[in-house]
Image 1 (cartoon, rainbow, N blue to C red):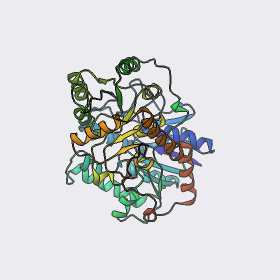
Image 2 (spheres, helix red, strand yellow):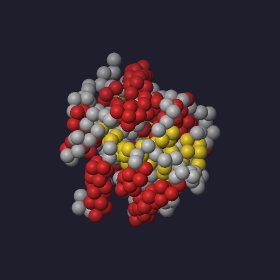
Image 3 (cartoon, rainbow, N blue to C red):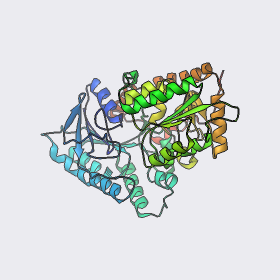
Image 4 (cartoon, helix red, strand yellow):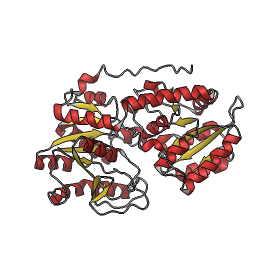
Length: 435
């Protein structure tokens, strides 16, 4: 079997920070299945030094690039980049058989759905199965997270692409545990559906010696905070409006001292459209706050082990998150044994399902500060036990080897329709036990 895994924003070691395509491809190869990753030549998760012509091989995984123009922010240049990928994907057919093997399966992974038309045509041309992999729900993410009107032309075009994907896919897969509900509500409950969540790699979680300037700087900050007796909260991920990082900083406030007198440290890693805003706020708040930009993934894992609580971010949007979430940052935190603060309504998420932290609908800074205080007041042993619950859960449910095998089984046997998943996930709020 040959799989084309198509994701505009794919990545891997030395290419981009997104690791899913790389890990799945490696796992499939262990099962004797070939996989080529097809991605954009430029996107916002690319590493600064990444500049490739197709094809490139890294650690046994082959990447093919669709030429896409550079962009910054979320304006016209990013729309042009999306259009570049959607149009350029058609031309990938010309690389068969000299550069690419003929596919048996084309998985179109959806950070956006606009390449689905080309993916469908490619699947027809090569008589391959077409899988639509839902990562973000479009256009619901636009209307809920960014506040875009549902009548906006881009929203309407995106909604059409999503409907087209549901209609023409042979199988629908999703990292979201309740995406089946989204499909049922839109009349696609008869489509075969499988949950393939974001995963972790135990070998990748081994950590590394700190070498980068940003990691060394963060290490010095952590050492000083430890000497000062602070409870350290860490955020590592994208810095955009949906991530709630500014709200998190404001909930703690200048002085980094909670109402019960507990002193905390707030460490932020990542980049995004709000990077400068976060930097300015942290500079203004002073002691107890630090922004350290991005660090290499292995070095980040080493630093996470020196923290006490992971903040999962997200501004609660029940109409969107009721279909589930699967942030990579939660995998990172739990892999390193950190309890997690997730300030949204429980939705079958790894935190509430594992009881590895605190999942709670939080609508304002007062509620967020209360949750922070609650976790900071725990003993080190109590926090360790929460983190171990989370770690045990993700090791049992989110290993890439298992996810890849589940994917292969779905491709070979066709999974149950979306409507049959109604009883599989319990989403009631669980009361966190700190015993």
